[in-house]
Every structure is written in structure tokens, then in C-alpha cells.
Length: 259
Image (cartoon, rainbow, N blue to C red):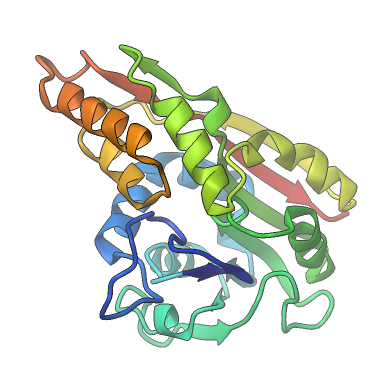
């Protein structure tokens, strides 16, 4: 699968193995599930960015469009959904009438200063060149425009009891070509792009349901790692109370402004 120039078996807001029938598309249900997990933090970042005053918004790496409708409802003006996969852009979650553009976030097909907000969610994790993608987004911003980025950092993952999930996520994502530590890099990368940065480290306080383990199934792993995933799955399934097993993946919320 692909995201912004990177060919992968995994993409966007879900990491399920590709479908033999539609090899370029992820599972929409998993994309919606992860977007729902991030609803609260995303709302805070959008408020910080003044989304209700934004006239021209680009969603970079929109995938099936599971967040596009939310952006369209909250923004004052037009929202454009951009993804490198035309099949993903045909997804049913895109709102009727939403503008959709097939393109690569390393080389945005827009003139300088085209947008006053550019939104990334679980996208910079997968790009081949995060500094280049952020510099390109900064180029496409108007003065006073903002980049809104919501990205994870699996190096800071916490769990109880220790199931080995942090190591599995970090090694699996790295093997797939992603950067599992991208979150902590974002403030400096945005500053390097000439932007003024606001950052918040957030969490998703929830019990460790099956989804916390099942998303690992799409990552490349050896037989030993697969066995550890199965052990973690069994431990989560055997929980005796909502919070007995606990998993926390830190997310960085970044709002970076072009002066």
C-alpha cells in the first residue's frame, strides 16, 4: 500500500493487511475506529488552530475520508482531500461535493500560499521524508496559516501488565518503513520549516481492548514476534475488568503557524 510516495502493505489510519480484491485500500472500519479514538485530541487541536475561521483547508493523506466530513463541518470555507491513492479518494466517507485531489504530499500540486490550514493525522508517520513534506506544506500556507499534525510516538508507549507491545510496535513499524518515533520530532521539524510551534502531548485513556493488539496483525514480523502478539491477545481477552490491562500510546498535537 502507499501513502504520500511510500509503497507499503499498510497505510493511513489502519494497519490491516491489504485486501486481495482491492490491494491499494485499507480497511475502512479500522480507519474509522482509529479516527474515533482520536476525536477528543483532534477537536482540541482544531480549536487551537481556529478551524472555524479557516477559509481554505487541505487534508493531506485523507485516505477514505473518515475525517474529511468533520473538517468540512468545522471549517468556514472549502476543504480539499488529498491522497496519493485515487481508489481511497473514492471512499464513501468523503462528504458529498467534497473536492478530492490525487497527489503526493512531498510535491503538493498547489501554488504557494494556497491554504490557511493543512491537516495531517497519522500521515507523517508513514512519509518517506517528513522534513520535506512539512517544508512543502509550509510553502503552500498563506501568512497566518497553520499546519495541524496529530502523530503518535510509540517509543513512549506504556502498558500494564508488560505485554511487550511497545517493542512489537516499534520494530514492526520500522520494518514496514514507518518512523514510530515521529511524534517527538515534529516540533523541531516545524521550526526548521520556519513555523512557530504550539505542542501538546496527549493520551487516549481507554481500556486495552482487542483493537490494541489486532492492529499489529498487519505489520511485518517473524514467527517469534507473532507468538508474542498471540500471547498479548490472549492476555487482553482474559481481562477481569476494564482497566486491568492498560495501554497508552502518546500522541503529539502540533499547531504550527506561518508568520
